[in-house]
Image (cartoon, rainbow, N blue to C red):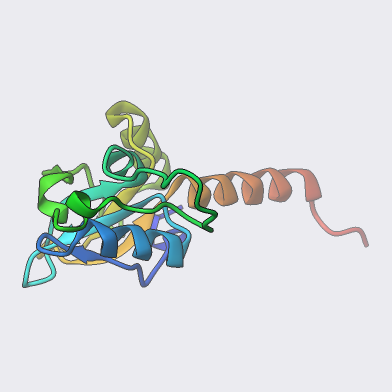
Length: 147
């Protein structure tokens, strides 16, 4: 099975000059654990994850809220300051098993999927890989139809 068959596409991205606040909002809006970070030509230059942002997100004491609240100094920070540069990535034509092994080896949850020009075309997440695994188990146990 190929990465393009299970990846999430299209995928939300963020720019290096986006604020941390904007990245947190995008992650929450799309229910993602990471975002590919792109340059002005939409080429992958990094990845920013919930874990990368965790140090910049602080709860506000005594205030009920539905999500993380950023303190004032953090609001001015940009994604370039917290992202992982030169991320591990996959191509749409890569084998899913090979890409899954790459996530394990690199210790990452998600892989940006890029075309030959380095442009983002999708994201391969742990959720995508779990869905693939469930599909494979279902296919193996269902067997051929009865006649």
